[in-house]
Length: 121
Image (cartoon, rainbow, N blue to C red; front, side, top):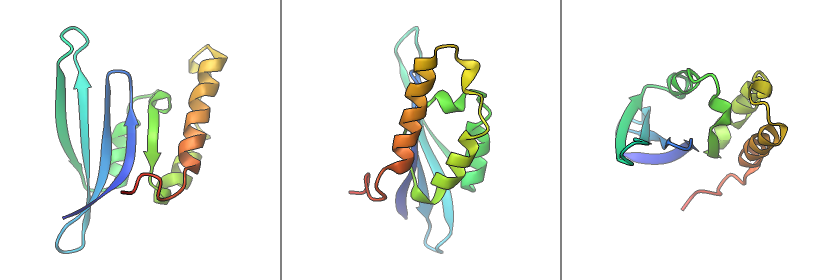
């Protein structure tokens, strides 16, 4: 099965990479390989969660009302316009520190403008 990085995002205690996986029939599914750290024990647990579509993954990600304060590392070019549009709907002011807001906005802007093949091997 061919696997392509589709989104890479993290928080201070979790994070993961979403891959688009094409099966032998040419059909796509999405594999989210993610981990979470237990802050009390420093134990890391790794998970593989499958999604039938990017929309299904996105719906799950955005159940966190502050998803836009996660740290994006990569967004596939096919989804960049969608993510840009989603970011126009968020309330950055939920965090009172203006510099913190601007820092996260810059990171999203950078990731959404990275060259298309930036993370390709």
